[in-house]
Amino acid sequence: MGKELPRLHLRVAQDNPIYSVPAGQRNKKADEWLRIGYSVERLEQAAERLEKLVQKLSSANIAVVETEKPQEDKNITSDPAFQKDLKLIRSIMNIGEK
Image (cartoon, rainbow, N blue to C red; front, side, top):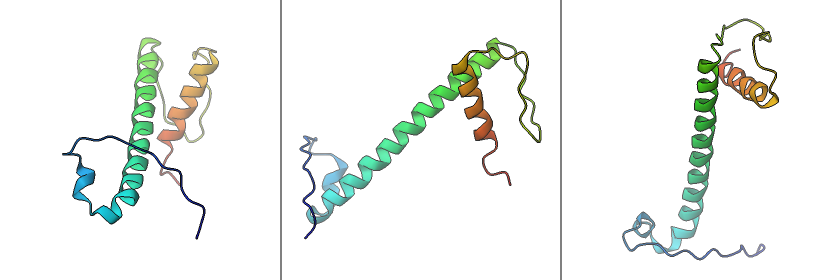
């Protein structure tokens, strides 16, 4: 038998959906749902960052032009955080391209 997993004690309302899962399967299902919830939370945080970046881009009047090879725009601020966010946007725009 493998190493025993640590316990997490939760208090949930009696109408929580976890109670619709058979008793012997609740731990596994709760773990799955927690992982999904974490992934959704990360996606929401990424969306918030993207929204903030789009607001920055709009207020700076920067046009994003699709090119074969990304190139630096000389009008972009030299703020490292802005550059990091811009790099994130460019990588997202390239998802799925071959």
